[in-house]
Amino acid sequence: MGSAGARSSDTAARVRALGIDAPLGRSFACILPGHDHAARLHPATGFWRYHCYDAAEGFGLAEVRAYLAYDGIRRISPVEAVRWRERLDHEAGLLDRDPVRLLVPGYGAECGEADRERHRPARRAARSALASG
Ligand SMILES: [Zn+2]
Image (cartoon, rainbow, N blue to C red; front, side, top):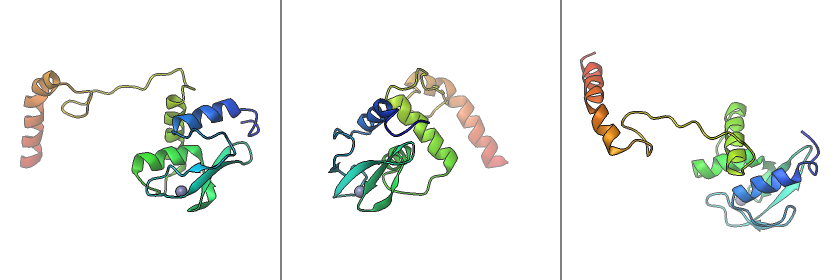
């Protein structure tokens, strides 16, 4: 990874994907859930950090993306942060890969009514096996 300025267009794209429309380095309304104060992005060694009143040490942009999804600040592991970074990069248009869509029978928005009906006997059998097992 280069200096904070070397990839500033990528950083700007990530910032826009987070819903922040202020120029880098300028203050804006903190986007973290439940936060009602100003925030700012500061350059750190090789990347930008998100700083606000409740985050004096700052957060990485991937952490900010995770906190938006989790509706609050929580500890995330380094591996989890990598996944959120990939998601943020995708949302910022920085990855040329599409997300892998998994069809889990009976679950999720990807599953239409026809799928649910088609998999209903299998789910019933699985529930019976769990209940008797
Ligand atoms: Zn904040």
